[in-house]
Structure formats: structure tokens, C-alpha cells
Image (cartoon, rainbow, N blue to C red; front, side):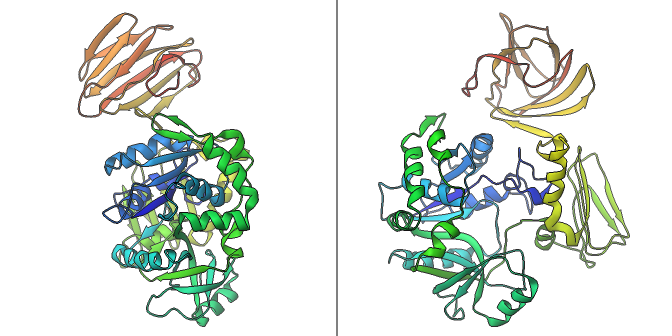
Length: 470
């Protein structure tokens, strides 16, 4: 069986404002109903696959468990990286976590790719497994369909032959357009998809030989890993010592046992809005709309509205991206899709919260979003999952009024515990110890009105918390 290792720590800044640091693209529904993370986990599950290892960070741990639960993958091993250190330390640490099964195959995949032909991809994995069992480090390359400057390339020893595996001559950085056109014409280049397959023993040996400086900190981080609510937190001090480097630079480009398996089906890294437009169904004028969006006399344009109450209309647009959310709107020329990350950099420099914060804040018990805020009051909508329990807490600077609008809430205020159903409410005085939970089998929604001199999220004193945040 193959153990999937799913890399799930990126922030996807080129898909702002939908993708932000607090809720990146791999968890959003970019194309279709499933998030890329869910689609990746589903693709790498079944009789040929063992439970996955997911590499993520602390901010995303409950998002990961929520979406894994939708697939019934409760036995996944979730490793929490205390700092972002690129793909080499993440993959090495995942391999160390599997070191007790040295002959096992591990399939490393990003969590945010679109695979159009899943049967073709599985066939490619089967071919790659044959090479990996013989000691090869396998990388999967995408058959190029255009002279693309946004991807790295794999130069093969010969032109691909019926999808069979071939030796990799060298890795090529993202090229300028003339060079990309030359490589497309040459016929012996593949796009580098960043998907790998190898035995645990072989990748560990490769790291020891080609990147020995990474071995000690990653091994120490794994040995210091501590369980936390079903996660494994890697040792923070040790992991911080690991060099920030990709697996291509650290190992693959230095090794002579690299085999590439071509995959010719539909593929996208969903890295920017132009890639999203390519992946979506389009009308006869090349337009794609999503949500409450309408295109009128437009051409080759993406219109996406993430708010049901906001109607986005494009009139006479050409080669345009327009993405509207409740708290931010992006309008850009399609040719500038790769430069959206520059917008995020500028907004961060100006301390604009929309640069990193998503309008809906996800928590282990559910989520909340601010509907209205002013100097002395704030109105929130809160969703609590079935069985979700907020911490037992109090506030020093605000009082709250809760109105249940769907489902049932069990509310604790001081010594009193009571059930509230739809259209019932409760007042939480300033300083009162309180808690809300959802004892039902359907999501519970309520409207919270806060009033006070300070409304920040850090005005919380926690006394008990089932998610170990107290």
C-alpha cells in the first residue's frame, strides 16, 4: 500500500481575496463543490492507499480535521509544523515518521492541485510504483500543452514514450517565454508538478547523502513531537534549525536515480486566477461566472461573487478578473494574474487586515463572522457544529446578547444552564462566566450583539476548554 503525504501549509496569495493566510485556497471550493484538499484526499484514498500523513501548521489543524472527517479519514496522521520551512524539511520529517516501515512507498502531493483524469493519474502512480520499488526517486511530470513560463520543467533523456517512465536529465527553473517555446518544440520536457513517489528508505538515504544538514534538526523535531488532541506537534526549537529549502534543490537536483512518469491528463496547480478561469466551464464568449455573478457583453472574463447578497455584474469587460467578497473586491487584468501576490504585500505593509484575515473565522467548534462593527458595538453571526462546545469564559470589557436563529443552544451563564431554541435569547452581563454549546444533530446558528469599551478577540479569559486552549 502507498502512504499519501499531503502538503497542506501554503497561503495561496495569488488567489487573494478568496485565499488568505487565515483561510488559504486549499480549503475553499475553487472549482466544483469540493475544496482542493478534499479532492486530493479523496483521490489518494481507497484500497491501494494507507491512511494519509498530512503536513500542516497550527492555524489550519482544525480545518484539516473537519475536511478529513467529511471523507471519513479519521485515522490520518496530522503533523503540525511549528514554522514554515518549505518542502524539503516537511517531506523529510514525514519520512522519519514512517521510518518503522522502510520499504513502504510514500506519495507526496500538494493539497491544492486539480487532476482532471483521475484514472490516468492512478495509472501513472502504478507505473511510478514499479520504479520506486527498484530504488528510484520518482517525480511526476505533466505533458505540456503550451509554452508556460509559470512552471518549472523536467528535461528527460528522451521524448516521452506512451507514458512510460524515463530518467530525468535535469530540473529547469521557470523559463522566459522564448526558452519555454524551445522546450515545448523539443518534445522531451515535462512540467514539474511537485508530486513525488519513493520508498521511505530511499528518500531517507537521499537526504542523508545530499542534504545531511537537514537530517539532525528534522529527526530531533520528530523525536520531540508531542500529541495534542490527535495531532503531533513537531519540536519547535529543533524544527526552527532546519534550512528553508525545497526538495528539488535539497535532494532531487543532486541525485542520479531520478525517474519521471508523464501524466497527460488535465492538471492545474490552481495557482492564480487565470488558472481558475481555465479550469471552469465557460460560455461561448469565454466567460466564467461563480455565485451571484452575471456577465453582459463580456469576453474572456472571470466574475466571482462569494456573497449571496452581492450581485456582481460585469458589463463590456474583456480579459478581466473580478472577485467580490463581503469585505474585499479585486478587479484586475487577466494578464496580471501572477501579480496579485504583490497586492497582498502592499496591503500588509499598510496593516490592512483583509490582507491576511478571512471575513469568516474558523474555530474547532465552528465559525463566526462580523456583520457590523462600530466603536462600541459589534454584531456577529456564529455557527456551532453539532457537539461543538465553546470555552467556559468571561470578558472584562463587553457584555453580549445572544439570539438563536436556527438549531438549539445549551447556554451556561454563571450557575444557570438552559436550552434555547429558535428566536429565544439570553443576556451575558459583563464579567459573567459563560459558555455556549450545540447539543443537537444539526448546526446551530445565532446572532451575537456585543457592546462595550473594547471588542477585541483577546478580551477572553478561558477557564475550561475541550480544545486545550485554556
